Image 1: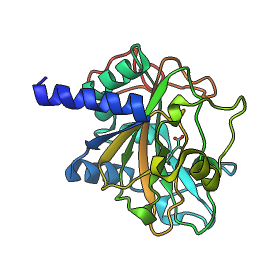
Image 2: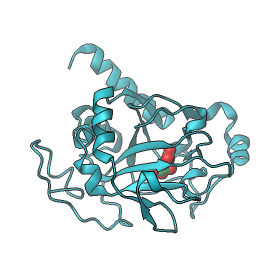
Image 3: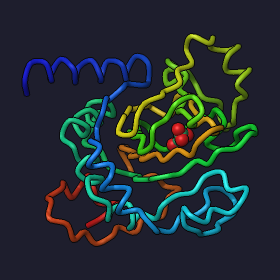
Image 4: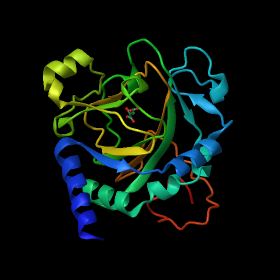
Length: 249
Ligand SMILES: O=C(O)CCC(=O)C(=O)O
């Protein structure tokens, strides 16, 4: 690795350790983004949350706040698995969690505009998926203030969670941690960042335009609330079978 890249990798790891959040810069080119969107055209979405309605992007029923693509459609997209298995990301994950990582979740979710309070993933919360884990998020649409930025409360990955996880109101977060610790990530499509989502975070409800977010989770263990059905991988790339064992084989 070139000395500049080594320094950059150290800075990213340090930011993740200290703040719980680190920018990863642009990870997809315009051409790669176009390939991904083309591959998703007409694919079914499943409502995220209590309802489980299925629909396409052209026919999102009123009231749907978030909706996810199916794993097989995500894995069929070009460039996704290559990024999840990017050596620099895998090294970051290994050094952050302290062992060879397991890719324990791959998701792609639309958030649709609404003028209301967020709940679930759209209200401040912590994740408790493993003893140590990190997520990589990649915007697949441009995200500005009205586009549902991800918001992270810096340093909260090093504070104790209550025994039972619960949502936090914006006012509570501001009072407890101060506005300066609350970082909203805006960025163009292709922009990526890593977060230890044991720390307090949320996806803001978009007010102006829908947001498409790709996410990978790297952990020590499988996440025991998920039922894994590894898919058959037909692609030409070679990926580490241990790291990817829950997602495909
Ligand atoms: O949509 C986002 O920005 C946040 C997602 C989230 O809260 C999570 O993955 O735990």
